[in-house]
Image (cartoon, rainbow, N blue to C red):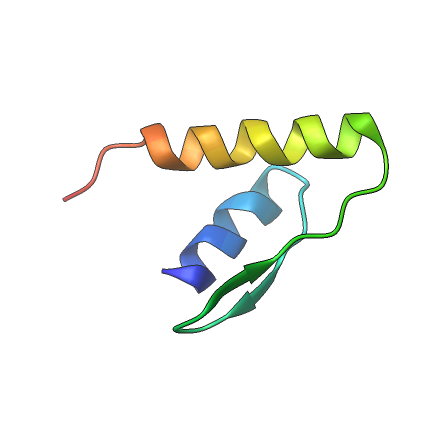
Length: 50
């Protein structure tokens, strides 16, 4: 799950560091970077599963 989320984010220009079985590390500095990450996370959560 962490790796697929990292891939999803990377496709949207957001880099996160996956730790399989643990989650991801996210480092943001600017408001725009934070907004980009939050948009990617919302898009990943909203995508259909199955």
